[in-house]
Image (cartoon, rainbow, N blue to C red; front, side):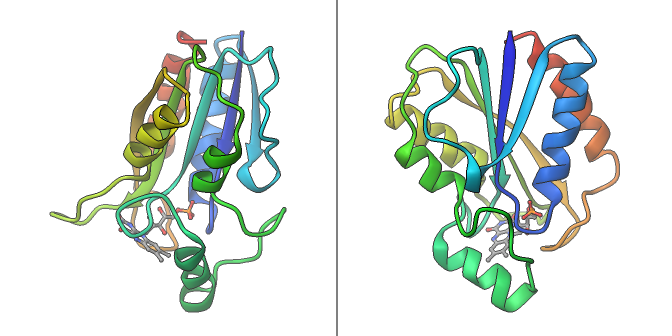
Length: 168
Ligand SMILES: Cc1cc2nc3c(=O)[nH]c(=O)nc-3n(C[C@H](O)[C@H](O)[C@H](O)COP(=O)(O)O)c2cc1C
């Protein structure tokens, strides 16, 4: 039983969520690895029994090179380890594991009537790319483009991590 979390994060909020998910899952005794998407290899370790993939919602979906460039130029996102890469690009190059359970998550701002979720887009793209058991997981809210996470979201991610351990 082993969970692998691949996370994209421009300002660190999705990374904080990933760390909380990992903490919650580890507390149940499951082994968990967390890798930033920019350095995540396309081939998953065969030992992995659950993949968790997450990142920020940009322009109603997963990030793109243009939206990541905007995060840097307009909002001052810092350069991150491994350079520019997102979960969209990772899915495109990943070696499919048709029977591996995969759950996605995202972060986004909480604005009424603004649709779209990277978690939803990622789950659909994963299935399209041969990860037949991918499904959409949770959305975690931030208070603004740069964060921070809304109150209680880190705790919610920790609890969700403990639940996810049951799928591994
Ligand atoms: C270029 C850009 C586009 C964004 N588009 C959306 C959007 O469509 N919907 C939304 O809820 N949040 C949007 N956001 C806010 C991000 O979701 C927020 O910055 C992100 O959740 C922070 O997570 P991170 O620190 O992991 O990058 C956008 C942010 C940027 C920089």
